[in-house]
Image (tube, rainbow, N blue to C red; front, side, top):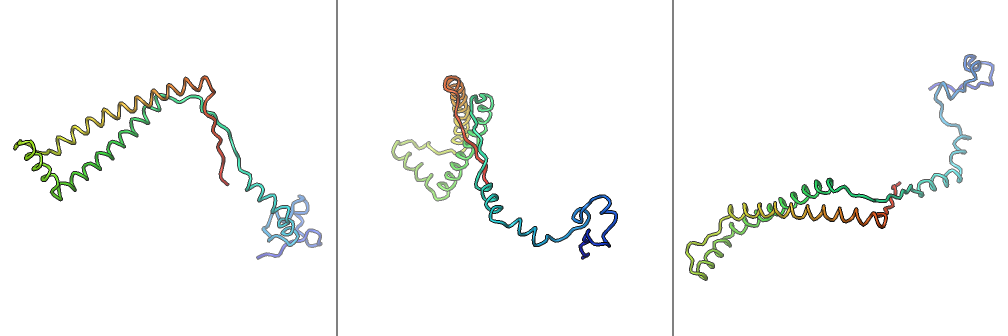
Length: 169
């Protein structure tokens, strides 16, 4: 670690004295006690905490919603919901088959209706369930697009929804 150079001494660096530079510009020194005392004053602490406490806020008004983006988002969202629902039904079907509940239901229906040809086919059920699920995805996506058009019409009258965004600090 080098010694700090005092410019007021006769042996001070002449190049730095000629350019008017300070010691802090050319070499790194630890802060002196006086500069540390200036930084740690109560006023400086209050200024820092007041900056932390005060967060930035912005007000935004949502005036239009794009129907095309609503359609794309709705199709993907409802398709994912359908897949989760069908996956849960497949797991339930597998569990019911493993514990023998499907065979018991099949025997009960054969006895009640005297129909010995009745059986439960998982493949038939899930292909029909998938087709019905796709129809529901399309239906609910179109309902969402209708709601987006309706929102756009109403926001023309009332000016939209005002949202206040704030930044965490």
